Length: 196
Ligand SMILES: CC(C)(COP(=O)(O)OP(=O)(O)OC[C@H]1O[C@@H](n2cnc3c(N)ncnc32)[C@H](O)[C@@H]1OP(=O)(O)O)[C@@H](O)C(=O)NCCC(=O)NCCS
Image (spheres, rainbow, N blue to C red):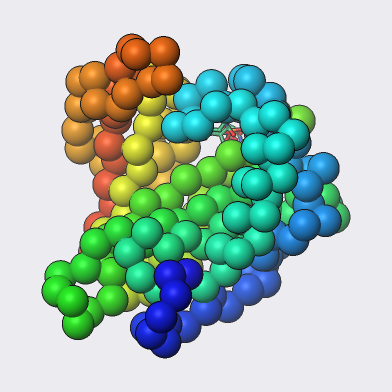
């Protein structure tokens, strides 16, 4: 949360239970389970490099603070716990609002799961709960996901969520090595979600 004035939006109603998962806040005790951020395969299409020990510590410390987004750029990070273990995490980042008086109305969503939990629909289940939270709890009008177009597992997940592939921006993301990556944008409107 950004400092200063009181939050405009209430904190999320966590823990959130789904058929197989519990979504809860991340704590410093989750550091070992979040070591998938040290796996180059997991980070291959993420907009930050594979974490070394210092970066992992910084990342987890940040995630533990992402509990009550209220202003643009505030983030919510939730652990997805399966069978007593952290299997992955999902995030919601508030983006824009119509004017200075209103809460943000657009948010970005994202996810990462440990490879050992892949292929069981767990990321889809967690992301579905995140979308439900986004539209039931926050006054959001629209959700977006930004993907490297080569990230086919993530784009399949967006498809499963019922998101629409809206744009393919060419060479939009600068890489550390001076090259450029395309940006695939998926969107989901509140009215589409409500229609099911
Ligand atoms: C993106 C990511 C979370 C997707 O993981 P995933 O395992 O493909 O997704 P799910 O957990 O939803 O599993 C879906 C698979 O389980 C299968 N499945 C089994 N039971 C299922 C169920 N009940 N519901 C849905 N799918 C189910 C699906 O058919 C699908 O199988 P497939 O891979 O053969 O098509 C994962 O690849 C990842 O963490 N990547 C690294 C981080 C990353 O790139 N994040 C995105 C940045 S934009």
